[in-house]
Amino acid sequence: MPKREDYISWDEYFMGVSLLSARRSKDPNTQVGACIVNPEKRIMSVGYNGFPAGCSDDEFPWEREGEHLETKYPYVCHAELNAILNCRGANLTGCTIYVALFPCNECAKAIIQSGIKEVVYLSDKYANSAETIASKRMLNAAEIKLTRLMPKRDIISISYKEKDI
Image 1: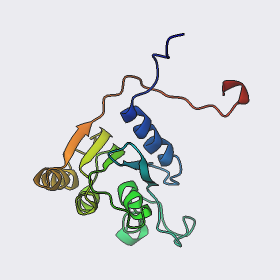
Image 2 (image 1 turned 45 degrees about the vertical axis):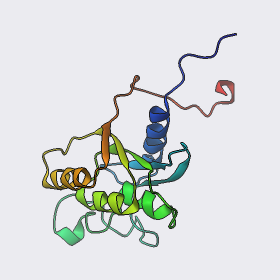
Image 3 (image 1 turned 180 degrees about the vertical axis):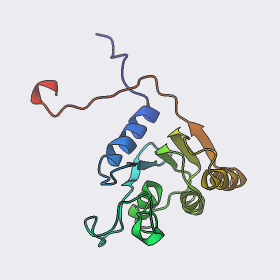
């Protein structure tokens, strides 16, 4: 019997882990996940956007507009930073980070400092924002490879039903 031909690529697999991680975010507007993979194709860490440990997501604001301190922006940790911090100091030199949304300038700094060598992303919807322009400028200066993933499929579904296993 020949092997299956419709299996997903490594890039689709790791981006899928990133997207699944995003489902843990409690942000009512934007859910982003990140997956860091070493050169041997082993997952080093995952993360998603949310408040730091010990900061209750029931007590801190999720608002996008209003007084700065009454919005989520000064409090939320982005998925990329969470994934880097979740590594607990592991060596990320040469790793690749998979993230659905192109990283902001603050996450770009952490990516560069951690030794990650490639960013694989799906969307660049904020390409014209100052944060993304600054991010690309730094990532390019640090010679980080930027790869926009063009998956072969639009949907990968996961079932918990025993009959599907």
